[in-house]
Amino acid sequence: MKIITPIEISESNLFSSNIPENDAPLWDLETEYAEGAQVIVAHVVYESLEAGNLGNQPDQDSARWLRLGATNRYKAFDKRISDRAAMADQVTYTIAHGGAFVSGVAVFGIAGGTLEIEVTDPIDGVVFSKTYSLFDDTGVVDWYTYFFSPVGVQRQEVIEIEIPPYLNASTRITVTNNGGIAEVGQIAIGRVLDLGVTAYGTNISIEDYSRKERDAFGNAIIVERAFAQLIDYSLKVTTQTARRLQSTLAEYRTIPVVWIGSTTEELGTLVYGYYRRFDIVLAGPTVSDASIEVEGLI
Image 1 (cartoon, rainbow, N blue to C red):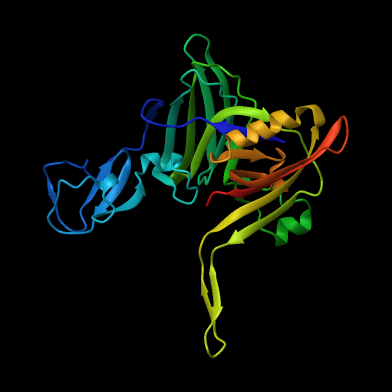
Image 2: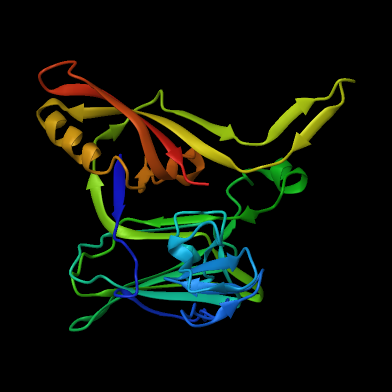
C-alpha cells in the first residue's frame, strides 16, 4: 500500500492554467456592494448578504458575506472532488515542484477523452510524458458483456506513481474533451510513500448523505445528495517499521492524502481523503497487522 502526500498548491507554484480567474471582480475596500454582488478574495468567491456593504472584508465577516467556494481555476485544489474546474475543450495546469519531491500524480473527478501528464526539468527537458485514455472498457470481457453491458464508461480518476523525482521540475496536466466540457475535480501531486502490503480482507463501502425518509402516509421522500467513499484497509507491515508508520500517519492526521491499496483500479482501493483511525497489532517479530479506515473527500 502506498500514499501520495500532496504539496500545497498556491500562487507560488501554480505556474499557469488556461482557466481565467474571471468569476467575479476582486474585492475592493472602497467599493460599496449591493446585496447579491460577488467578489473574489484569495481565489475564493463571496456573495454579499446585504445592501450598502462597504469596508467589510469577505473572508473575515461571515455575517455580511457568504462563501460560495473556490474560483473556477482553483477548484482543482480546494479539496472538493465534486466541485470541478471546467473549461470548453481542454483544461491545463502547470505546477512547479518548488524543491519538493514529486514522484506521484493523482487526478480525480475527470470528464474528458484523454489526460496527459508531462514532467519537465529545466536542465534535462521532458523527463516523463504519458497520455491516458479516459474511456474504460474493462467491463467488456466476452461477447455477452459486449452486447448486453455498457461498452465503456467514463474513467474519472488517473494515478501515476512512477514520476522521476526531480526537485526543480514542473508537472503539466492536460485534460482534453474535444467538442465538450473538460472537467477536473482534484489534482494531487507529491511524494509517494510505501506503508506496507495491502491484504485481502480490505473493506470497500460508501457513506451516503442522501435523505431517505417516509411521511405520515408511508410515502417515500428521497433527496439525493453526495456520498463519501469508505475503505477499511488491512495491511501487512514489517514489525520493525511500526513506529515509523505510526509517526507517518500522525503527521497526516488532518491532511488529505491519496491512498493506494492497489494500482489495479478495478479493485476500487484508490481514494483521496482522511483516515478516521488506524490500528497496528504487533503480531510477531517480523510481520505485523495494521488497519486504516479512510473516508474519501466528496
